[in-house]
Figure 1 (cartoon, rainbow, N blue to C red):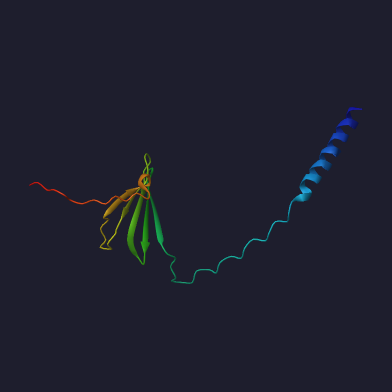
Figure 2 (figure 1 turned 90 degrees about the horizontal axis):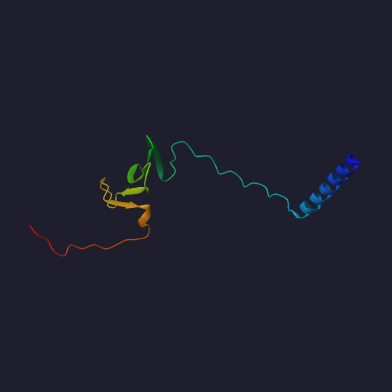
Amino acid sequence: MHKFIVLFLIVISNTAFAEQNAGFEAVPEPPELPMPVKSGETLEPDITIIRKGKKTIQEFRKNGQLYMVKIIPAVGPSYYLIDTDGDGNMDVRGSDLDKGMKINQWKLFEWN
């Protein structure tokens, strides 16, 4: 008798499951893969990832010139060093905490 009840419950649950899945649509085909990169062709920007201990450094280059460095320390927020004028020196330092916040700064007074 117990076997009959278990078999009956299995048949009922399978029927209910099949009715629930009847409304699903077919899975669409995956998109076509992009063309492979030709020899000598570079993708922009070129990113180099360097791991030093628990710290990660990402160097961003465009046309072979370093324009930004992102430092991700083990503790604390990540920050950026940016070359704004293209001379090779990292002029601006920014962090993830001050995204979208640019404050103008002027020198009003100077003492010697």
